[in-house]
Amino acid sequence: MPNIVLVGAQWGDEGKGKIIDVLAEESDVVVRFQGGNNAGHTVKVGDDKYVLHLIPSGILHPGKHCVIGNGVVIDPVALVSELDELKQKGVDPDGRFHISDRAHVVFPYHGLLDLTRESNLHKGKKLGTTKRGIGPSYSDKAARVGLRMGDLIDPQFDELLMPRITEANKVLQAMGADPVDAGQLLAAYRTAAQELAPFVSDTISFLGEACRTKKSILFEGAQGTMLDIDFGTYPYVTSSNGTAGGACTGSGVPPHRIDQVLGVIKAYTTRVGEGPFPTELTDEVGQTLAKVGNEFGATTGRPRRCGWFDAVVARYAAMVNGIDFWAMTKLDVMDSLQTIKICVAYECDGKRYNTVPANIRVYERCRPVYEEMPGWQCPTTAVTTLKDLPPKARAYVDRLCEITGVKLGILSVGPKRSSTMRVAV
Ligand code: GDP
Ligand code: IMO
Ligand code: MG
Image (cartoon, rainbow, N blue to C red):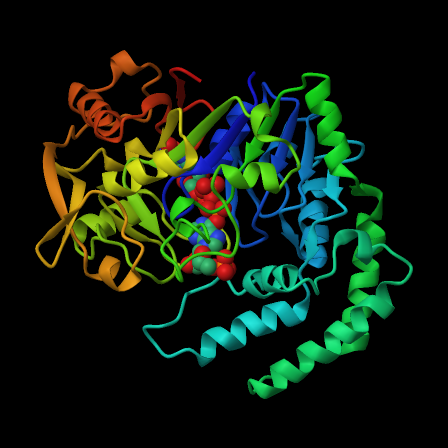
């Protein structure tokens, strides 16, 4: 299989975990390149359900190598419990799970800073973060004061960490929050370090060798294009680059080794957390999508906001990621709808927008311009080939591809591996 970068094309939760799981079968290595345990990637294998937060979804395929790249931020205590859960379910990571020694560490004070900053923000200004300390950890990385996984397993870890705790506690107290207990923190992180040390290594050389020996690499993006710190709806974004460029900076694999970019996109749109969402539906249709699609956050359990497919977002995602094919998911969730709308442009103050405006105050006021199509009103989840789709469902999928200018690579009509049509990927 070619080296594929898989990215979310909307606001996250597009079904990336499921598609990675399907493609991992044919890959040698699966790499996470950004984000942290703010991600929640659900994979259904038979009747078993796995939710992966930090570990690449490829881990469920025995023998496949899985890498947490340098661009990821890692909460080591959370990672140990994720590993333990997998081991209890019979997944063996030994010899095939690799954690970059350059990946930054998330500490409890990052989580507390995240939480305190959010609760100090006025209603309407909150970001709705996952409160996993992602923003503060990436802030430390950019400020060049972060600690990395290589530091966590270094004998001098305590000396490296103490000044960080002292500074973080001053900030926390100034913000009206309780300081962290240095003793407790050190004890918990020393234990986690012992558990993780066997997996920490120079993943850049490992991936370099994988490229040299023509192994096939699958890059697992987290979050989505509209949550990307540069291309998303700033400031209602996460703190990393979940778009295709992040695959290189977050793994050390050079751009010319990427063969293909696959955009995962739902047949409708969802968003969890705060921020503008032009096609959001607060009516019965929105409730139907949420209920049938089981739209609850895999990490926080929060209900996801649901809305119509937004072709402005999809075209923009196709452009900034260079998406070759769509992996379109959750078509089955729309089975009962009588009429379906597609947002083809926005309008704001009498002006038409065909792309996503940078100014968040303009974006907040953008109203969708819709075209309508008839629903197919029959079940699709048992369909296994495109030609057996109800004609109106096929017409809807074809229209989405046409107005976004991207070909269909994969179509998913259910959470299971078997509910997946491989069209061109
Ligand atoms: P990710 O973060 O992009 O990996 O997506 P999540 O796992 O957070 O959310 C996607 C949800 O949709 C999961 O519960 C999947 O099991 C489920 N899912 C994926 N593809 C399909 C599909 O085609 N149809 C249905 N009904 N569910 C799907
Ligand atoms: P996956 O990989 C959906 C959202 C949060 C919040 C914003 C910032 O499962 O698609 P953060 O904790 O990252 O600082 O929160 O980003 N968010 C996600 N939404 N799916 C995700 O990951 C997300 N990761 C972060 O809800 O709005
Ligand atoms: Mg998710």
